[in-house]
Length: 414
Image 1 (tube, one colour):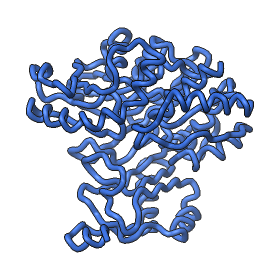
Image 2: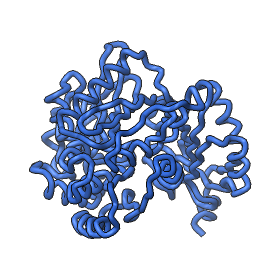
Image 3: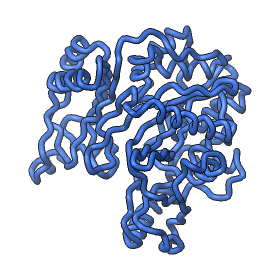
């Protein structure tokens, strides 16, 4: 979704020629044969004479890109390091070895037989060891709720983790596959994402992005950069992230680490580690740092030392999520003229429409707790300025969402 908007300009700035191989299978990876894809892609890349390979996609893209880089002798993190990040249980084990102060208590759960986990101290936060879009990730108050969640997750996980299990068998000696859940102590505080990169063994932190939730939920309202956390806290977070990626031997790639800061306890905890850039934040970094992280990723993939800072046009940037908490029928989405008008009024804006006219929001990929319908990225002098610009942009986009009634439901299905 973000590649089309960001890659052409990033490639032009770095004087790269970019070829696309494959299609996005992240929403439904069950039928994806990872080893066959890697073999075919490697043959094509050799024939075309490319100098590097990268992927912005989380799963299975980031692991496949690492595998291809290894097969072709190109820069990139090892598949084992990428998989150690992706498999949340093995990631936690590695974190406990090198940054124990940042790791909550955790327990592996077999969803086919969750009885062994019933002695947990509830509530706990439960998620699949390989999740996507926060599916089956939630706070669980008691044993009955855990049994229900495990039963719901069993069927979904079996197909979803097939490529992961193929890659684990090929590149690691991990005994546990992807069909498990992990239960952890519930974390409280301010959530952030620490974005960084490693080039030839040198780890550098690019920036820290604040994650702002809708009150009382775990649904994102917006992401704001730079972080409002104290500089000293951000430096500690960067140190924790760097210690972890060094420990697992992660090299020649971008990473992001989601963390939580509890101000009352002055404690930092890792939520999860991703062996890739965050595409949604790429232009936020460009607005404030002067360099789009797609350009950073392309540079590292090609074996070139990345530039992380240039003069920038904005003091702050945000990615704002348009979201509702009940299903709606989409009566109108922005038309071409609306998008062109917004582009003239806000040249820096990135607008992603996540719904279709005449359809319900529930027909799109959602997190199970709420309903997204748009993303708008904007820069500004500060957060207040961005909020004012965003309000104006949304008025010009002219979405029209109608509560789903019996008649509306019949209309959307006709």
